[in-house]
Amino acid sequence: QLQLQESGPGLVKPSETLSLTCIVSGGSITSDFHYWVWIRQPPGKGLEWVGSVYHNGDTYYNPSLKSRVTVSADTSKSQFSLTLSSVTVADTAVYFCARRDLVFPPTWGQGTLVTVSS
Amino acid sequence: EIVLTQSPLSLPVTPGEPASISCRSSQSLLFSNGYNYLDWYLQKPGQSPRLLIYLGSNRASGVPDRFSGSGSGTDFTLKISRVEAEDAGIYYCMQAVANPLTFGGGTKVEIK
Image (cartoon, rainbow over all chains, first blue to last red; front, side):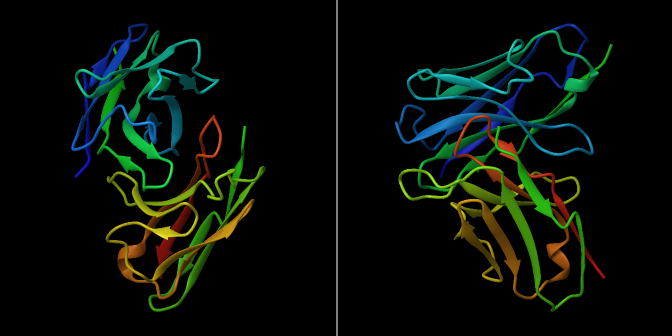
């Protein structure tokens, strides 16, 4: 059964870089039929797509974050990552990783809270 | 950017009664392969969103059959045939037909 687990620091200082990893188990990270996504949810607010990476390495980012965000996949480790630079308190959120598929249901991780604070 | 508009924003419901939530898209969510890339999620306080419906009308594993999704193109509906107390929470629709992926603003369902 496919499972995704986010990992990374729960606390990041303002102006520093947030780095998260999503460990994928029970499924291939290299298939043509799905792609990998980061989504976030600030406390008390709605859901926001951060970015995606495809099997061929193509990436797409939320325009509001594009200058600060990088999503990449490491197929040898069956994981994909998110880095967000120059963070502010507005980047405090629960960050979710997910797999999206062309025909099968999407799968989400349980999420990890990242707080930006000095 | 595709904008998803959910209505109503808030929905008080009586247990045993039906409920319906609308999600309207600014562009068609029907892809060339014939699938509508529209999901429905339920998020309860302190929990992660739970997938209810994918591809517009496919019920996710373990989701009670009182939940159903319908629609195509730009108009979608999530229906609960008989609301139960455990159905309280915030419902979101999400489109994945085009980047940037976007979410509706959410509908808060409260049980009377």
